[in-house]
Amino acid sequence: MVAFLPLSTFLMKADEPIMVHIPLSSQQNVSKGNRDITLSPIECWYFSDVGIIQTTVYDNLGEIAIEVLNATTGETFYDSFDSAFTQQHILNITGSSGFYTITYSTESGETYLGTLELF
Image 1 (cartoon, rainbow, N blue to C red):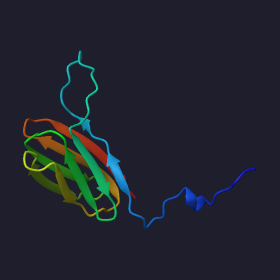
Image 2: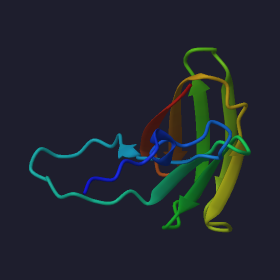
Image 3: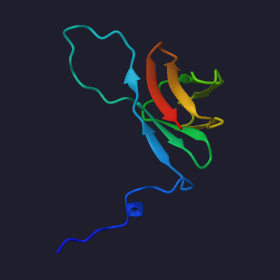
Image 4: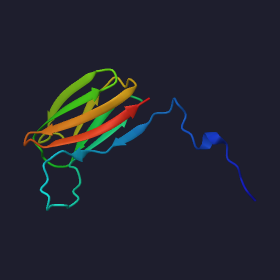
């Protein structure tokens, strides 16, 4: 016996909130000999229902600057926080459609980059 489920079972309704994990890549200069995979000390999520980027930091990286650029509209959002005092940070963005780049710059000069496309 074959059961058919309605298409709506597999599709999320447009008005439902969406939580998107944004993978970050390190933009550090890595020596050619070092090929170890390391986890990013920064984790990034987008929450569609409230239009925020939530950042979680797992190491004390000192002062962290955040830049979120919507390359489609030109909107740019800036913020910074000190990871010595808080592990989580919230940045409000408009949530307009477009291709976003999220850049984290640490006090020591490390840079982490992520991308997000909103429709």
